[in-house]
Image: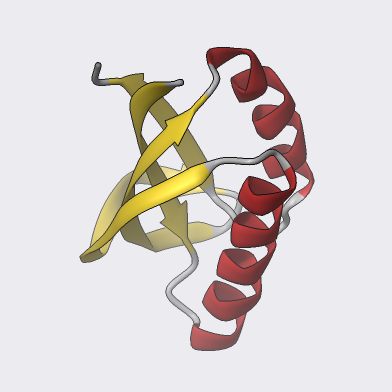
Length: 92
């Protein structure tokens, strides 16, 4: 198990953000990912429009997971309509 950081961008609308985060956390739990820390970065203007979104709420997750799970998580996150973008970075 390695340490990763995952940055996600959620919609700024409260209801969409809530359902997106719930789906995200259930996907992480289904793939046995240990969430060590969650940091809310806040609302920011996007560099360019993504799927009719001009602003997004940035959230940073510190995770502990097996690297082979990342591809499966990426597929699951693409099905989440309330997740604008995600990015995994290996930290250790």
